Image 1 (tube, rainbow, N blue to C red):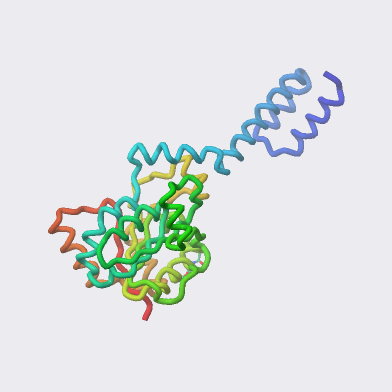
Image 2: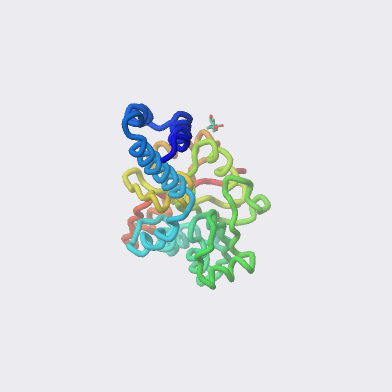
Length: 261
Ligand SMILES: *[C@@H]1O[C@H](CO)[C@@H](O)[C@H](O)[C@H]1NC(C)=O
């Protein structure tokens, strides 16, 4: 081991903000090898940390879904009959916004007198052929919901959102929620996770960029008021009636909002 290498290693330690740098300095005098070993280990840890945020473990997401991971998008699929009862005619032109939107859109398209479109906020590299077909036809669009939606005002009778808002900070919510309301003519139905349903695993972090923050129902209601969105009392009561008739109990928080006038 040449002196030169050791000193360049020390420089690296000096510039890096390692929590162990003090320990490295005291050891390096007696054992340069040990300090190099520690730097190498530290570098590996940093590299591992950097990669864990950039999607290298993205494949694990599929595994967690298969294990029956909790999802409000699945909940939307279960709730379609209830939504049809509650919203009737307003289900004729639906936009779903959220991950796995292809599954919701395909299901809605099987319903009579229902046209459906989807916005998928995340990449769909691992989507199946029928999903890619929906994208090719322009029925499903892949779009970052932090920016304006590519639709004219009131393009859809009903806009349904799932698993999408939990991942947005208030700063982005302030832009996204009015956008969702803008493209809705009759109403907006939002399926959010409940506090305690913590499902942001390391694998999901890579997909969503930040862990989901499950906010309480009162947080959301306050937020809707701030954003000048009114709850749709008629929608709420019709949904609850239909749900109790079919013994359907949503495991997500479901909010019904009026569109902007
Ligand atoms: C979001 O909008 C509300 C109401 O306009 C405002 O009070 C709040 O400060 C905004 N939050 C952020 C993080 O911009």
